[in-house]
Image (cartoon, rainbow, N blue to C red; front, side, top):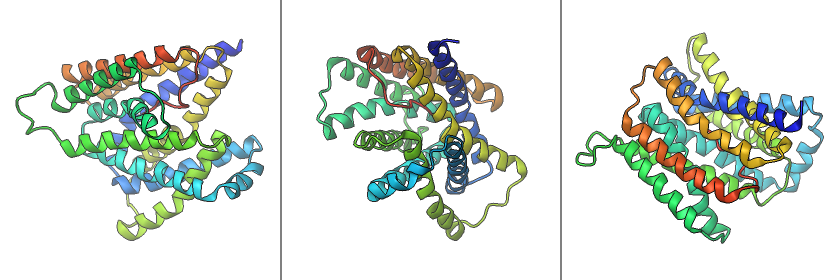
Length: 302
C-alpha cells in the first residue's frame, strides 16, 4: 500500500471517529456533570497517550521537553484540556448537540482572526468571505432561522460554544511557538491538567456514582476525542503527499455527525441547522483552497 493510500486510510479513521464525538458527548453528559466528565476523560486520555509514548519509546523526551519550558506547558495544559473542554462541555450541556457541534467548527475562523492579532498575519479577502459565511451560519443555527423572535435561543450556550473556538485557536497559536513533538506536547498537557481536575471534582462535586454505561461513555470520549484520534490524524498528515486532499476529508465529519445524532439520539435536525452548517463548511473550504499545499493546523475536529 502506498503512503498516500495509508494517509487517506488514517484520515478516514480519524474522520469517522470524530463524527461520533457529538453523540458521545451528549450520552456522557446524561451521566456526568461537565467537570466530572472532563476530569475522568482527561485522566483516561493521559493514560492512553502515555501508553502510546511508551509503545513508541518516546518517554525519554518527556522530562527534557517539560523542563525546557515548564511554564509554557503549564499554560498550554490550562487552556487544553482544562478550560477549553470545560467550556465546550458546558455548551453541549445547554444546547442540542446538533447545534453545538457545527458552532464548534468555526474555530478555524477564530484562528484566522486571532492569528491576525497575535501573529500579525494578514487577513485576505478569502478569509473575510469565510468569516462572513461562517458567522452567518452561526446565526442561522443559533436562531434556527427565526430572526424575529430570539426568546427561544440559548445565548449562553451559543456564547460558550463560540468561546470554545477562540480557546482552541489560542491553543494552536501557542503551539506554533514551539517545535516539540506533538504527541509529547499533548501528553504533557493532559498529564499536567488531570490531577488538578480530579482534585477540583472531588472537593466541588464529589466522586460521581454512575452505572457502567456512563464509565464506558466517558472512557470513549477520553480515548477517541482527546487521545488516539489525534494520533491517526497526525499520522495521516505526515504520510500525505498532498495535505489539502487529506485536510478536506475532515469536512465530511459534521454531516456524518448530524446523521448519528438523528439516528442514535433522535435529535431533530432542522433545515436551519443544515443550512447554517453548509455556510460554515463553505467558508472553511474557501480557506482550505487558499492554502493549497500548505499544511493546515494538525486537527480540525469536534
